[in-house]
Length: 82
Image (cartoon, rainbow, N blue to C red):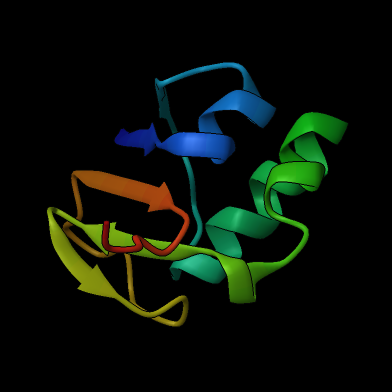
């Protein structure tokens, strides 16, 4: 079981701040593909991976990062200063 956390417009498009999922995905990219295939709201939220960042257990990671042993995946747009 993996906890997924969504922030900013990602949360708005999906309609949830967090959820738990069972997955066989080996990487973040595979998890995103699984979620995108679920429903249109996920597909819209994840349509442009270049506009997203991901953190695994609160550490920034790439979309090709393995999910082995990961408990939490956070998905969010890049942060800007201000």
